[in-house]
Amino acid sequence: MYLLTLLLTGGMLMAAAIMDFIKKEISVGFIMAIAAVCIIGALSNKNSSLYDMALGMVIGVLALAISRITHEQIGRGDGLVIMFVGMLVGVRGCFSMVCYAMMFMTFVSVGLIILKKAGRYTKVPFLPALFAGYALYIGDIIH
Image 1 (cartoon, rainbow, N blue to C red):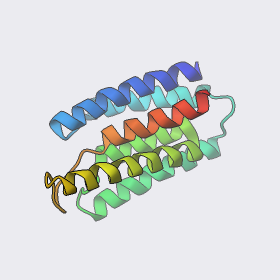
Image 2: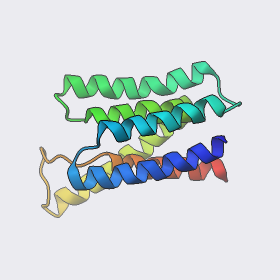
Image 3: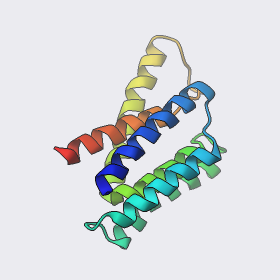
Image 4: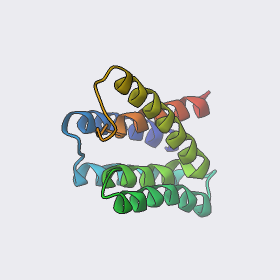
């Protein structure tokens, strides 16, 4: 059951990444659907504790706080997705996923600046990078 929810979450993150790339936003309903799948998956994981799930969620809560402080330089939807996926994969998984995503965003942003397609204040959607980070993390744990 846990593996199925990991794969389903990956598919939903891919869809969310596409939505974020095209519209620069993700609907609340879709975030709640991701939340439901993540909650079911987290509760079906026999190798995870409530403590690990809660710490995984804290990373998303911190992203939400940063979103509020920076007037949504990081979107609330990004923070909510990180929070729910963090509950599913735990603190180590969430930290790995977010680190992969941030490295990916660094390369993309530097590339856009070098190509003069973006400047300092250009907003770049984060969910595609988060999906890439999730895919890398899931690829690591499946092998």
